[in-house]
Image (cartoon, rainbow, N blue to C red; front, side):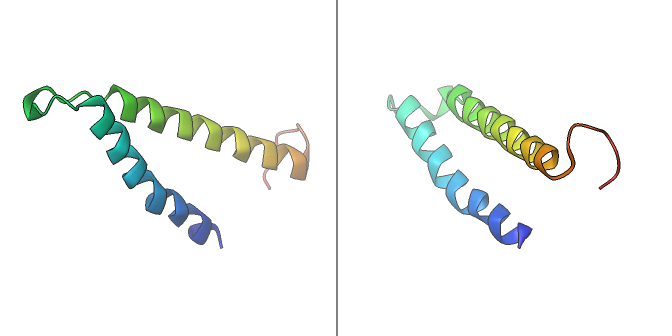
Length: 68
């Protein structure tokens, strides 16, 4: 079940990153590609995922640190 949910990120992430890259590099010069938007998208996505995983753990087990 976790892999099914994780696969949605793989399915959606590549087209979104391609659209961001296309919008940032509309000058047509392949030598000067700007990846800052895709890096920001990836970083924000990972940060939000970490927050959601932490919130899930806290809801399930509380704030105390112990093996689940």
